[in-house]
Image (tube, rainbow, N blue to C red; front, side, top):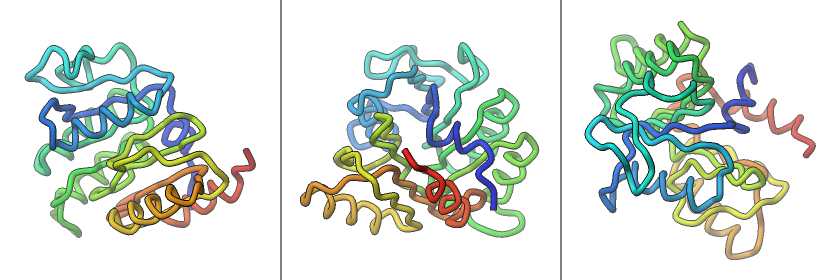
Length: 205
């Protein structure tokens, strides 16, 4: 159990979105929109080698091209690219990454294991793969696929399932209930429920 680099995971000063997109139904478009609409105060850096800008925001071809290492990297690229994106994030000095991408498999020889190995070489924390993302409403951070930004509050929500997390947030929203943080763990190849419980149990804000 470790909350190492959770400050960069849940209180990032900057966010890079690898796989940012303008396609209306793409995950990369939804997360960029959610980050911007939540009012995140730090820089948001879309990363897409095929575009100079995404939705009016300057884009970068690679994580290595960012002005400085991003605290949090959100990854929505195809499965076969994820291990190298993770490795690049680690080499660049980024602090944590959320892998939204599905289909990385599991166990020895899988893309998930390759991503986990690459992250550990650089002490990069990973949430996912197959994560819905994360949100910290009190810090105006919504790096997730949630259809509506969650309200701020005192409850922490930790869920393996995207569907369960989205359902609970929608139920809470209709009743005016908010959250201190929401983490969708997905396949939890690094950050797990025990890590999150350790963090939120000590979060007295």
